[in-house]
Length: 133
Length: 133
Image (cartoon, rainbow over all chains, first blue to last red; front, side, top):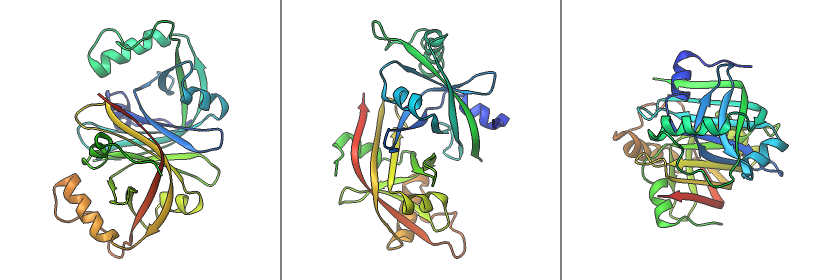
C-alpha cells in the first residue's frame, strides 16, 4: 500500500472536494464529486449510501481512482489509483456528520434521508502522484 | 451525443479545474486534474501533449469520464461519460495559450517545453449529469 506525504495528506484531509472514479460493469469509468477523508491506517475513505451506483460498482470491481486539488491552488493536487478493501456500515453515519462539519461547517449532515444507510468505502492507495507548488 | 444545458456549459467553460479519467491497458482508471473547454460542436476539449499517459490511454480505449465543480460552490458540478472521437495537433498550441488566458490570466501558456507537441482531445459526451444548486 502506498502512503501519502505530509503535503498530500494536508490536501486529502483539508476539506477539498475530491473526484472519485469507479467502473461500470462494462468497464466504462464514472467520475463524481465526493467528500474524502483519511483513516489512521492510511486508507482513503469515501462516505456513500446503499443503493448508489458507485457502491455497486466497487463491490463488483474494486479498482478506483481519486483526484483532488486544493481550493487554494490548482497546482496543489493529489491523484491516486487504488483498490477498495472494505465497504462497511460501521461508523458510517457518525462519519458523515464529521464530514459535514469539515466540508459545510455544520454539526450534522443536512441531507440524510429517512432510512438511508450510509456506507464507508475504504480504499488502499496503490499509486499516488501529486503536484505540490 | 448528449448536450450540456446552459448551467452545465457555464461550469465547463468557467475556468473551473476538471478531473479527467482515462483507462490503462488493464482497465484500471487514472484520474488527473486538467483544464477543459467546450468546442462549438459540443465536444469537450482536453489539451495535452504527445508522450503523456492519458493520450496513450485514449488512443487505445476511447472511454473517458470528466468531473468538474464550480469554484463558487461544491453544489454546482457536472460529471459526464463519453468517448474520445479525435486527437489532433491542429490548433492545439493556440488553444493551450487561450486556456492559459482563461485559467491563469496569462497571454501565453508558461509551461510549454521546447519541442513539445500539444494535442487536443475531442470528447463526445454520452451521459451528462449535474447538480445545480
